Image 1 (cartoon, helix red, strand yellow):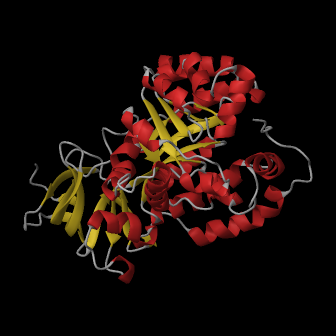
Image 2 (image 1 turned 60 degrees about the vertical axis):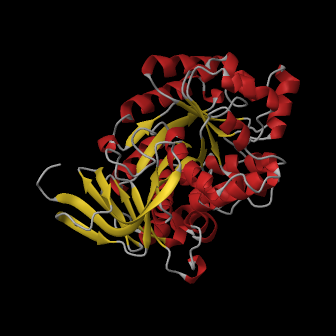
Length: 448
Protein backbone atom coordinates (compact mmCIF):
# COMPACT_ATOMS: atom_id res chain seq x y z
CA UNK A 1 0.00 0.00 0.00
CA UNK A 2 1.36 3.40 -0.95
CA UNK A 3 1.27 6.58 1.14
CA UNK A 4 -0.16 8.69 -1.67
CA UNK A 5 -3.91 9.45 -1.58
CA UNK A 6 -6.22 6.85 -3.09
CA UNK A 7 -8.29 7.79 -6.13
CA UNK A 8 -11.63 6.98 -4.49
CA UNK A 9 -12.79 5.93 -1.05
CA UNK A 10 -16.36 4.72 -0.41
CA UNK A 11 -17.37 4.68 3.24
CA UNK A 12 -20.28 3.51 5.40
CA UNK A 13 -21.71 0.92 2.99
CA UNK A 14 -22.64 -2.73 3.32
CA UNK A 15 -20.53 -4.71 0.83
CA UNK A 16 -21.49 -7.92 -0.92
CA UNK A 17 -18.52 -10.26 -0.51
CA UNK A 18 -17.65 -13.85 -1.43
CA UNK A 19 -15.93 -16.26 0.98
CA UNK A 20 -13.32 -18.83 -0.09
CA UNK A 21 -16.16 -21.19 -1.09
CA UNK A 22 -17.67 -18.39 -3.21
CA UNK A 23 -20.66 -18.12 -0.89
CA UNK A 24 -22.27 -14.71 -0.90
CA UNK A 25 -22.16 -12.72 2.32
CA UNK A 26 -22.23 -9.11 3.50
CA UNK A 27 -19.88 -6.87 5.48
CA UNK A 28 -21.54 -3.92 7.20
CA UNK A 29 -20.15 -0.43 7.67
CA UNK A 30 -17.30 -1.15 5.28
CA UNK A 31 -14.82 1.05 3.44
CA UNK A 32 -13.74 0.37 -0.15
CA UNK A 33 -10.45 1.90 -1.27
CA UNK A 34 -9.85 2.25 -5.02
CA UNK A 35 -6.51 3.05 -6.64
CA UNK A 36 -5.59 2.97 -10.36
CA UNK A 37 -8.94 1.46 -11.31
CA UNK A 38 -8.53 -1.46 -8.91
CA UNK A 39 -10.05 -2.32 -5.53
CA UNK A 40 -7.13 -1.91 -3.12
CA UNK A 41 -8.98 -2.97 0.02
CA UNK A 42 -12.37 -3.68 1.56
CA UNK A 43 -12.20 -3.15 5.32
CA UNK A 44 -14.39 -2.49 8.31
CA UNK A 45 -11.76 -0.17 9.79
CA UNK A 46 -13.21 3.12 11.05
CA UNK A 47 -10.23 4.89 9.48
CA UNK A 48 -10.99 6.65 6.18
CA UNK A 49 -7.74 7.04 4.24
CA UNK A 50 -7.02 10.20 2.24
CA UNK A 51 -8.38 10.14 -1.31
CA UNK A 52 -8.94 12.41 -4.29
CA UNK A 53 -12.65 11.62 -3.99
CA UNK A 54 -14.86 10.40 -1.15
CA UNK A 55 -18.34 8.87 -1.41
CA UNK A 56 -20.47 8.61 1.71
CA UNK A 57 -22.57 5.49 1.08
CA UNK A 58 -24.44 5.14 4.38
CA UNK A 59 -27.72 3.24 3.88
CA UNK A 60 -26.43 1.77 0.62
CA UNK A 61 -25.15 -1.64 -0.48
CA UNK A 62 -22.07 -1.94 -2.68
CA UNK A 63 -22.24 -4.72 -5.27
CA UNK A 64 -19.95 -5.74 -8.10
CA UNK A 65 -21.26 -4.06 -11.24
CA UNK A 66 -23.80 -6.21 -13.07
CA UNK A 67 -22.88 -7.86 -16.38
CA UNK A 68 -25.35 -8.17 -19.25
CA UNK A 69 -23.99 -11.41 -20.74
CA UNK A 70 -25.86 -11.30 -24.05
CA UNK A 71 -27.52 -8.38 -25.74
CA UNK A 72 -27.80 -6.44 -28.98
CA UNK A 73 -27.50 -2.98 -27.47
CA UNK A 74 -28.34 -0.88 -30.57
CA UNK A 75 -31.68 -2.70 -30.87
CA UNK A 76 -33.10 -0.34 -28.25
CA UNK A 77 -34.03 1.67 -31.35
CA UNK A 78 -36.57 -1.11 -32.10
CA UNK A 79 -38.05 -1.28 -28.61
CA UNK A 80 -41.75 -2.10 -29.00
CA UNK A 81 -41.92 -2.30 -32.82
CA UNK A 82 -42.52 -6.08 -32.97
CA UNK A 83 -44.99 -6.96 -30.26
CA UNK A 84 -47.08 -10.07 -29.51
CA UNK A 85 -45.65 -12.15 -32.35
CA UNK A 86 -44.32 -15.72 -32.63
CA UNK A 87 -40.56 -15.96 -33.15
CA UNK A 88 -40.68 -16.61 -36.91
CA UNK A 89 -42.96 -13.65 -37.67
CA UNK A 90 -41.00 -11.44 -35.28
CA UNK A 91 -37.82 -12.07 -37.28
CA UNK A 92 -39.11 -12.35 -40.85
CA UNK A 93 -41.93 -9.81 -40.90
CA UNK A 94 -40.51 -7.03 -38.72
CA UNK A 95 -37.00 -7.20 -37.25
CA UNK A 96 -34.93 -8.49 -40.16
CA UNK A 97 -36.65 -6.20 -42.72
CA UNK A 98 -36.00 -3.19 -40.46
CA UNK A 99 -32.39 -4.22 -39.82
CA UNK A 100 -31.74 -4.14 -43.58
CA UNK A 101 -32.10 -0.34 -43.19
CA UNK A 102 -29.52 0.00 -40.41
CA UNK A 103 -26.75 2.56 -40.83
CA UNK A 104 -23.70 3.04 -38.63
CA UNK A 105 -25.34 6.22 -37.29
CA UNK A 106 -28.43 4.27 -36.18
CA UNK A 107 -26.17 1.78 -34.42
CA UNK A 108 -24.22 4.58 -32.73
CA UNK A 109 -27.33 6.30 -31.38
CA UNK A 110 -28.86 3.00 -30.28
CA UNK A 111 -25.65 2.08 -28.48
CA UNK A 112 -25.56 5.46 -26.70
CA UNK A 113 -29.14 5.07 -25.50
CA UNK A 114 -28.49 1.47 -24.44
CA UNK A 115 -25.36 2.39 -22.48
CA UNK A 116 -27.27 5.15 -20.69
CA UNK A 117 -30.02 2.70 -19.79
CA UNK A 118 -27.55 0.10 -18.53
CA UNK A 119 -25.44 2.53 -16.49
CA UNK A 120 -28.61 3.76 -14.77
CA UNK A 121 -29.55 0.14 -14.04
CA UNK A 122 -26.23 -0.80 -12.45
CA UNK A 123 -24.78 -2.65 -15.48
CA UNK A 124 -21.08 -1.95 -15.87
CA UNK A 125 -20.24 -4.50 -18.58
CA UNK A 126 -22.19 -5.96 -21.50
CA UNK A 127 -21.58 -8.67 -24.11
CA UNK A 128 -22.80 -7.35 -27.44
CA UNK A 129 -23.40 -9.28 -30.64
CA UNK A 130 -24.41 -7.02 -33.52
CA UNK A 131 -23.45 -5.14 -36.70
CA UNK A 132 -21.33 -1.98 -37.23
CA UNK A 133 -19.50 -2.87 -34.05
CA UNK A 134 -16.68 -0.40 -34.66
CA UNK A 135 -19.30 2.20 -33.81
CA UNK A 136 -20.33 0.40 -30.61
CA UNK A 137 -16.68 0.16 -29.57
CA UNK A 138 -16.25 3.92 -29.95
CA UNK A 139 -19.36 4.55 -27.82
CA UNK A 140 -18.01 2.20 -25.12
CA UNK A 141 -14.66 3.98 -25.13
CA UNK A 142 -16.35 7.36 -24.79
CA UNK A 143 -18.97 6.55 -22.15
CA UNK A 144 -16.67 4.57 -19.85
CA UNK A 145 -18.43 1.20 -19.73
CA UNK A 146 -16.78 -2.20 -20.09
CA UNK A 147 -17.84 -4.42 -23.00
CA UNK A 148 -17.26 -7.81 -24.64
CA UNK A 149 -17.93 -7.18 -28.34
CA UNK A 150 -18.41 -9.36 -31.40
CA UNK A 151 -19.26 -8.45 -35.01
CA UNK A 152 -22.15 -10.77 -35.96
CA UNK A 153 -22.18 -12.61 -39.26
CA UNK A 154 -24.35 -14.98 -41.32
CA UNK A 155 -23.06 -17.45 -43.91
CA UNK A 156 -25.27 -15.69 -46.46
CA UNK A 157 -22.71 -12.85 -46.37
CA UNK A 158 -20.06 -15.15 -47.86
CA UNK A 159 -16.51 -15.51 -46.50
CA UNK A 160 -16.22 -11.76 -45.90
CA UNK A 161 -18.72 -11.97 -43.01
CA UNK A 162 -16.46 -14.30 -41.08
CA UNK A 163 -13.36 -12.34 -42.07
CA UNK A 164 -14.89 -9.07 -40.88
CA UNK A 165 -15.79 -10.67 -37.54
CA UNK A 166 -12.17 -11.79 -37.07
CA UNK A 167 -10.75 -8.46 -38.18
CA UNK A 168 -12.96 -6.59 -35.72
CA UNK A 169 -12.04 -8.93 -32.85
CA UNK A 170 -8.31 -8.59 -33.44
CA UNK A 171 -8.38 -4.82 -33.95
CA UNK A 172 -10.40 -3.98 -30.82
CA UNK A 173 -9.10 -6.59 -28.41
CA UNK A 174 -7.82 -4.72 -25.34
CA UNK A 175 -9.12 -1.33 -26.55
CA UNK A 176 -10.47 1.48 -24.34
CA UNK A 177 -7.64 0.98 -21.86
CA UNK A 178 -8.45 -2.73 -21.56
CA UNK A 179 -12.19 -2.21 -21.02
CA UNK A 180 -13.02 -3.85 -24.36
CA UNK A 181 -12.59 -7.58 -24.91
CA UNK A 182 -13.70 -9.27 -28.11
CA UNK A 183 -15.16 -12.47 -29.53
CA UNK A 184 -15.90 -14.08 -32.87
CA UNK A 185 -19.66 -13.84 -33.40
CA UNK A 186 -21.31 -16.28 -35.82
CA UNK A 187 -25.05 -15.76 -35.52
CA UNK A 188 -26.34 -19.31 -34.90
CA UNK A 189 -26.12 -22.88 -36.27
CA UNK A 190 -29.31 -22.25 -38.28
CA UNK A 191 -27.82 -19.23 -40.11
CA UNK A 192 -24.15 -20.28 -40.23
CA UNK A 193 -23.01 -23.43 -42.08
CA UNK A 194 -21.03 -26.22 -40.50
CA UNK A 195 -18.04 -25.25 -42.67
CA UNK A 196 -18.19 -21.66 -41.42
CA UNK A 197 -18.55 -22.80 -37.82
CA UNK A 198 -15.57 -25.13 -38.18
CA UNK A 199 -13.50 -22.33 -39.74
CA UNK A 200 -14.57 -20.03 -36.88
CA UNK A 201 -13.50 -22.64 -34.31
CA UNK A 202 -10.08 -22.89 -36.01
CA UNK A 203 -9.71 -19.10 -35.97
CA UNK A 204 -10.75 -18.94 -32.31
CA UNK A 205 -8.06 -21.42 -31.31
CA UNK A 206 -5.42 -19.86 -33.57
CA UNK A 207 -5.94 -16.34 -32.22
CA UNK A 208 -6.96 -17.12 -28.64
CA UNK A 209 -10.43 -15.64 -29.12
CA UNK A 210 -13.71 -16.82 -27.61
CA UNK A 211 -16.88 -17.43 -29.63
CA UNK A 212 -20.24 -15.81 -28.79
CA UNK A 213 -23.30 -17.18 -30.60
CA UNK A 214 -26.96 -18.17 -30.29
CA UNK A 215 -27.61 -21.93 -30.05
CA UNK A 216 -30.55 -24.12 -29.08
CA UNK A 217 -32.41 -20.90 -28.40
CA UNK A 218 -35.70 -22.79 -28.04
CA UNK A 219 -37.10 -26.32 -28.14
CA UNK A 220 -38.39 -25.94 -31.72
CA UNK A 221 -34.86 -25.26 -32.97
CA UNK A 222 -33.51 -28.36 -31.23
CA UNK A 223 -36.27 -30.60 -32.60
CA UNK A 224 -36.04 -29.17 -36.13
CA UNK A 225 -32.26 -29.66 -36.14
CA UNK A 226 -32.68 -33.28 -35.03
CA UNK A 227 -35.27 -33.85 -37.74
CA UNK A 228 -33.26 -32.26 -40.55
CA UNK A 229 -29.68 -33.07 -39.59
CA UNK A 230 -29.90 -35.92 -37.07
CA UNK A 231 -28.14 -33.80 -34.45
CA UNK A 232 -29.15 -31.02 -32.04
CA UNK A 233 -27.65 -27.52 -32.30
CA UNK A 234 -25.36 -28.42 -29.38
CA UNK A 235 -24.28 -31.46 -31.36
CA UNK A 236 -23.49 -29.17 -34.28
CA UNK A 237 -21.27 -27.06 -32.00
CA UNK A 238 -19.47 -30.24 -30.90
CA UNK A 239 -18.87 -31.68 -34.38
CA UNK A 240 -17.67 -28.34 -35.78
CA UNK A 241 -15.16 -27.82 -32.96
CA UNK A 242 -16.87 -24.79 -31.43
CA UNK A 243 -17.01 -26.61 -28.07
CA UNK A 244 -13.22 -27.02 -28.23
CA UNK A 245 -12.91 -23.22 -28.12
CA UNK A 246 -14.14 -20.95 -25.33
CA UNK A 247 -17.80 -20.34 -26.13
CA UNK A 248 -20.64 -18.25 -24.75
CA UNK A 249 -24.00 -19.74 -25.78
CA UNK A 250 -26.96 -17.39 -25.78
CA UNK A 251 -30.24 -18.72 -24.41
CA UNK A 252 -30.04 -22.53 -24.57
CA UNK A 253 -33.69 -23.03 -23.58
CA UNK A 254 -33.69 -25.86 -26.15
CA UNK A 255 -30.77 -27.70 -24.53
CA UNK A 256 -32.01 -31.30 -24.21
CA UNK A 257 -30.99 -34.01 -21.75
CA UNK A 258 -29.00 -35.67 -24.57
CA UNK A 259 -26.95 -32.45 -24.89
CA UNK A 260 -25.71 -32.49 -21.31
CA UNK A 261 -23.00 -35.17 -21.78
CA UNK A 262 -21.88 -33.35 -24.93
CA UNK A 263 -21.46 -30.11 -22.99
CA UNK A 264 -19.73 -31.98 -20.17
CA UNK A 265 -17.18 -33.35 -22.67
CA UNK A 266 -16.37 -29.92 -24.15
CA UNK A 267 -12.67 -29.16 -23.99
CA UNK A 268 -13.22 -25.40 -24.20
CA UNK A 269 -14.68 -23.15 -21.51
CA UNK A 270 -18.45 -23.24 -22.03
CA UNK A 271 -20.85 -20.68 -20.56
CA UNK A 272 -24.53 -19.95 -21.16
CA UNK A 273 -26.37 -16.61 -20.98
CA UNK A 274 -30.02 -16.63 -19.89
CA UNK A 275 -32.49 -13.84 -20.75
CA UNK A 276 -35.77 -15.06 -19.24
CA UNK A 277 -38.09 -12.16 -20.02
CA UNK A 278 -37.91 -12.80 -23.75
CA UNK A 279 -38.69 -16.50 -23.33
CA UNK A 280 -41.87 -15.66 -21.47
CA UNK A 281 -42.79 -13.06 -24.08
CA UNK A 282 -42.34 -15.49 -26.98
CA UNK A 283 -44.26 -18.16 -25.03
CA UNK A 284 -41.39 -20.62 -25.33
CA UNK A 285 -42.28 -23.78 -23.38
CA UNK A 286 -38.93 -24.11 -21.58
CA UNK A 287 -36.30 -21.89 -20.04
CA UNK A 288 -32.53 -22.24 -19.71
CA UNK A 289 -31.81 -25.43 -17.71
CA UNK A 290 -29.83 -23.58 -15.06
CA UNK A 291 -29.83 -26.41 -12.53
CA UNK A 292 -28.60 -29.03 -14.99
CA UNK A 293 -25.88 -26.67 -16.22
CA UNK A 294 -24.92 -25.87 -12.62
CA UNK A 295 -24.48 -29.59 -11.96
CA UNK A 296 -22.02 -29.71 -14.90
CA UNK A 297 -20.08 -26.73 -13.54
CA UNK A 298 -21.12 -24.55 -16.48
CA UNK A 299 -21.56 -20.89 -15.46
CA UNK A 300 -24.89 -19.31 -16.38
CA UNK A 301 -24.68 -15.54 -16.74
CA UNK A 302 -27.63 -13.16 -16.66
CA UNK A 303 -28.69 -11.32 -19.80
CA UNK A 304 -31.51 -9.36 -21.38
CA UNK A 305 -31.12 -10.07 -25.12
CA UNK A 306 -31.97 -7.02 -27.24
CA UNK A 307 -34.68 -4.56 -26.25
CA UNK A 308 -36.60 -5.42 -29.44
CA UNK A 309 -37.59 -8.71 -27.80
CA UNK A 310 -37.11 -7.92 -24.12
CA UNK A 311 -38.20 -4.25 -24.13
CA UNK A 312 -35.53 -3.43 -21.56
CA UNK A 313 -31.88 -3.95 -20.71
CA UNK A 314 -32.66 -4.50 -17.02
CA UNK A 315 -30.36 -7.23 -15.69
CA UNK A 316 -31.82 -6.69 -12.23
CA UNK A 317 -35.13 -7.97 -13.57
CA UNK A 318 -33.33 -10.90 -15.23
CA UNK A 319 -31.90 -11.84 -11.84
CA UNK A 320 -35.32 -11.90 -10.17
CA UNK A 321 -36.99 -13.69 -13.09
CA UNK A 322 -34.25 -16.32 -13.24
CA UNK A 323 -34.74 -17.09 -9.56
CA UNK A 324 -38.54 -17.26 -9.91
CA UNK A 325 -38.55 -19.31 -13.11
CA UNK A 326 -36.12 -21.81 -11.63
CA UNK A 327 -38.39 -22.32 -8.64
CA UNK A 328 -41.36 -22.77 -10.96
CA UNK A 329 -39.78 -25.08 -13.54
CA UNK A 330 -37.97 -27.31 -11.02
CA UNK A 331 -40.92 -27.36 -8.62
CA UNK A 332 -38.49 -26.58 -5.81
CA UNK A 333 -38.84 -23.35 -3.79
CA UNK A 334 -35.33 -23.92 -2.39
CA UNK A 335 -33.79 -23.39 -5.86
CA UNK A 336 -32.66 -20.75 -6.75
CA UNK A 337 -32.13 -18.99 -3.47
CA UNK A 338 -31.53 -15.25 -3.39
CA UNK A 339 -27.87 -15.80 -2.60
CA UNK A 340 -27.55 -18.17 -5.54
CA UNK A 341 -29.22 -15.58 -7.76
CA UNK A 342 -26.69 -12.97 -6.59
CA UNK A 343 -23.90 -15.42 -7.42
CA UNK A 344 -25.27 -15.68 -10.98
CA UNK A 345 -25.45 -11.88 -11.18
CA UNK A 346 -21.85 -11.42 -10.02
CA UNK A 347 -19.17 -14.11 -10.33
CA UNK A 348 -20.99 -16.37 -12.77
CA UNK A 349 -21.82 -13.52 -15.12
CA UNK A 350 -18.20 -12.33 -15.00
CA UNK A 351 -17.02 -15.85 -15.85
CA UNK A 352 -19.54 -16.17 -18.66
CA UNK A 353 -17.89 -13.30 -20.54
CA UNK A 354 -14.38 -14.52 -19.75
CA UNK A 355 -13.66 -11.90 -17.09
CA UNK A 356 -13.98 -14.05 -13.98
CA UNK A 357 -10.40 -13.29 -12.96
CA UNK A 358 -10.83 -9.52 -12.84
CA UNK A 359 -14.55 -8.89 -12.16
CA UNK A 360 -17.44 -10.37 -10.22
CA UNK A 361 -16.39 -9.79 -6.65
CA UNK A 362 -15.30 -6.76 -4.63
CA UNK A 363 -11.91 -7.96 -3.45
CA UNK A 364 -8.36 -6.60 -3.55
CA UNK A 365 -6.89 -6.76 -7.04
CA UNK A 366 -10.23 -6.82 -8.85
CA UNK A 367 -11.22 -4.03 -11.23
CA UNK A 368 -13.23 -1.36 -9.45
CA UNK A 369 -16.59 -1.91 -11.18
CA UNK A 370 -18.98 -1.05 -8.36
CA UNK A 371 -22.63 -0.09 -7.99
CA UNK A 372 -24.19 1.49 -4.92
CA UNK A 373 -27.80 0.55 -4.21
CA UNK A 374 -30.07 2.63 -1.96
CA UNK A 375 -32.26 0.44 0.26
CA UNK A 376 -33.92 3.25 2.23
CA UNK A 377 -37.10 3.27 0.10
CA UNK A 378 -40.39 1.95 1.53
CA UNK A 379 -40.40 -1.00 -0.91
CA UNK A 380 -37.09 -2.28 0.52
CA UNK A 381 -37.85 -1.84 4.23
CA UNK A 382 -37.61 -3.48 6.68
CA UNK A 383 -34.67 -5.72 5.77
CA UNK A 384 -34.90 -9.16 7.34
CA UNK A 385 -32.85 -10.97 4.67
CA UNK A 386 -30.55 -8.65 2.73
CA UNK A 387 -30.08 -11.05 -0.19
CA UNK A 388 -33.83 -11.45 -0.61
CA UNK A 389 -34.31 -7.70 -0.39
CA UNK A 390 -31.77 -7.16 -3.16
CA UNK A 391 -33.17 -9.84 -5.49
CA UNK A 392 -36.90 -9.63 -4.90
CA UNK A 393 -37.63 -6.15 -3.51
CA UNK A 394 -34.99 -3.78 -4.87
CA UNK A 395 -35.20 -2.49 -8.43
CA UNK A 396 -32.62 -1.27 -10.88
CA UNK A 397 -33.89 2.26 -10.22
CA UNK A 398 -32.53 1.92 -6.66
CA UNK A 399 -28.99 2.06 -8.06
CA UNK A 400 -27.64 5.48 -7.07
CA UNK A 401 -24.05 5.36 -8.29
CA UNK A 402 -22.27 3.35 -11.01
CA UNK A 403 -18.48 3.08 -11.18
CA UNK A 404 -16.29 1.40 -13.83
CA UNK A 405 -12.52 1.08 -13.41
CA UNK A 406 -12.80 3.50 -10.50
CA UNK A 407 -14.43 6.20 -12.66
CA UNK A 408 -17.88 7.42 -11.62
CA UNK A 409 -20.24 7.17 -14.61
CA UNK A 410 -23.40 7.99 -12.63
CA UNK A 411 -23.51 9.85 -9.34
CA UNK A 412 -26.74 10.02 -7.34
CA UNK A 413 -28.78 9.06 -10.47
CA UNK A 414 -27.10 11.70 -12.67
CA UNK A 415 -25.41 10.35 -15.81
CA UNK A 416 -22.00 11.96 -16.25
CA UNK A 417 -20.83 10.62 -19.63
CA UNK A 418 -23.92 10.57 -21.89
CA UNK A 419 -26.51 13.13 -23.05
CA UNK A 420 -29.77 11.18 -23.27
CA UNK A 421 -31.95 14.06 -24.47
CA UNK A 422 -29.73 14.69 -27.49
CA UNK A 423 -29.59 10.97 -28.37
CA UNK A 424 -33.38 10.65 -28.18
CA UNK A 425 -33.82 13.71 -30.38
CA UNK A 426 -31.47 12.45 -33.08
CA UNK A 427 -32.87 8.93 -32.97
CA UNK A 428 -36.40 10.28 -33.36
CA UNK A 429 -35.42 12.09 -36.56
CA UNK A 430 -34.06 8.85 -38.03
CA UNK A 431 -37.04 6.64 -37.18
CA UNK A 432 -39.09 6.94 -40.42
CA UNK A 433 -36.17 5.76 -42.58
CA UNK A 434 -35.21 3.02 -40.13
CA UNK A 435 -38.73 1.60 -39.79
CA UNK A 436 -39.57 1.57 -43.52
CA UNK A 437 -40.39 -1.99 -44.64
CA UNK A 438 -41.74 -1.02 -48.05
CA UNK A 439 -38.60 -2.30 -49.82
CA UNK A 440 -39.54 -5.92 -49.06
CA UNK A 441 -35.95 -6.87 -48.17
CA UNK A 442 -34.69 -8.68 -45.09
CA UNK A 443 -31.18 -9.43 -43.93
CA UNK A 444 -31.87 -13.13 -43.37
CA UNK A 445 -34.64 -15.77 -43.24
CA UNK A 446 -35.72 -17.49 -40.05
CA UNK A 447 -36.65 -21.09 -40.87
CA UNK A 448 -36.34 -23.49 -37.99
